[in-house]
Amino acid sequence: MRSRSHRITNRAAKSFLVPDRFKPPPIQAKGLTKTFGDRVLFENAALKVERGQLVALLGPSGAGKSTLLNCLEGIEPIDSGEIVVAGQSISSLTESELARLRSDQIGTVFQFFHLLPTLTVFENIELSLLLKHVPACDRQERVVELVNQLGISHRKGAFPSELSGGEMQRVAIARAIAHRPSVIFADEPTGNLDSKSGTEALEILTQLCSDIGAGMLMVTHSDAAASYCSVRYRLSDGTLEPAD
Image (cartoon, rainbow, N blue to C red; front, side, top):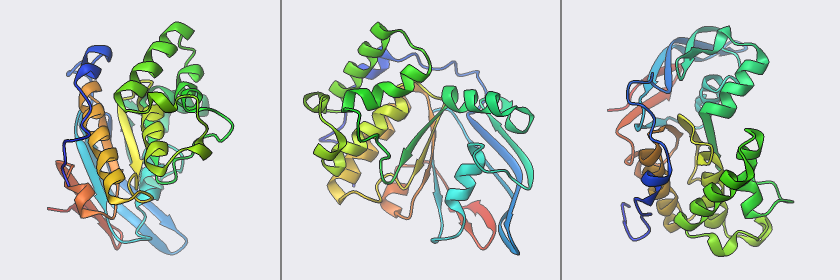
């Protein structure tokens, strides 16, 4: 699975500012409980994602993995517990403060890419930088470097409908990482890709997270994908516990 033929270069380390190692972990959560009707999705769950660490979240379909990811991102409320993102307890934030925290500290990669069909590759990647009001010259530099590093510079003027699945996921990864977040949430990032494209996507995610010091929490059904992660959790029957 760990082919290095598509590994991107270490030039990214020169162009991205590596976060201070003394900053708080991107994600700390404890005592999390979430119910849906009479069903307990998870109870008294705890997990932590350190900077530069890749963490896998495994479990059967319908166990609540994506719901847990949404709770950690502040998209869905928890019934009880505490979630701290980059040193900030999200329960103490207003809606606007929470939106700002997501914009600044979180990048998301989806199984079905979620690219905007009316925007080009370049514009899709640039979007997160526009939302953060990054100056035009800096946006240009960051996007150009990313498309070069990810091997899609020749596609920067193409629209999503003109791309292969592997190319679309590279664009989605570039968009998630462009604003240099503290943590990447990846929800089945290889689930809609063939084996070769999935391997390439994981290689890219692994190195980019290392380059900028971001942690990653990845929901996956794939043991091969989970092998890229140094820490693995399993969510099953309402219990979250280490998978090893």
